[in-house]
Length: 106
Image (cartoon, rainbow, N blue to C red):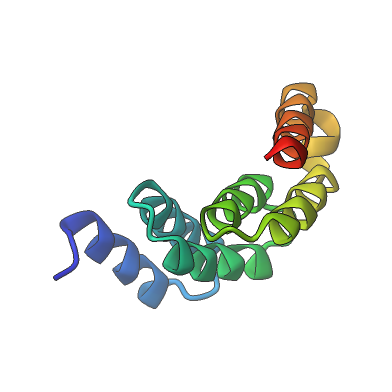
């Protein structure tokens, strides 16, 4: 039985299927619950709907790491660096660079 939060986000995805926000929110919930595969699916839909959604790219990489898909996560975080937001946000760039370095050490 889905939690109230999960139910709310699922309803958002049904009501607004062309909006990445519901899929991002659902993916983050699954990420927080370590439901990696479900998180990847929801977050992949969010970035499909909005390829410039840097937060969704970052979270998608986190979910891929959870699944043990290090190479996928690396590609995903490199893609996140290409978003307009990441090109302007030095702290996001630094965070992603650190994640990529940590992944190489993992």
